Length: 187
Ligand code: ADP
View: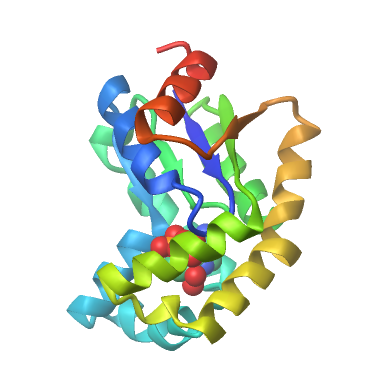
């Protein structure tokens, strides 16, 4: 089963994605985590992505589709993946669809994590205090939210036209939201 998590920064995709992936026994793949790790290790990918990420802008579609292709080639990804924040532009949605189709797969569910802007700003400010992420400073947050609004929000419409979107009310306790996810996915 292939599941895509969509929603603004700070919507809780990472937390719920980990719970869901464990429950389904499939890997969770987050491009944000992979890129942060590449930056930390100073790989060629990390060097290319660092400044863009820290400013809160999007890494290029080519880079993203390259890392997605590598991820899908791993044996553990053979039965399905929980894709967390992996698709942020319509070309990425198209590209992921093509890559999955190579092995007869498609995105089965898009879970849209629905949160208010106010809640997001509050969560990101809190996370900044705890995690010290370079892209949680006010300027970068503004850029991330506008990238979301301008480039990622249209991805929702793209999948909605394909009838696979389920909205998850993403305010409440971690357990309550996990239960809502479970109701949709049915496992
Ligand atoms: P956020 O909560 O802001 O979405 P992530 O940890 O998921 O944080 O991603 C951090 C950064 O990594 C993004 O702001 C962006 O620069 C880069 N990134 C991650 N996934 C993608 C993607 N699919 N396309 C472009 N850039 C991405």
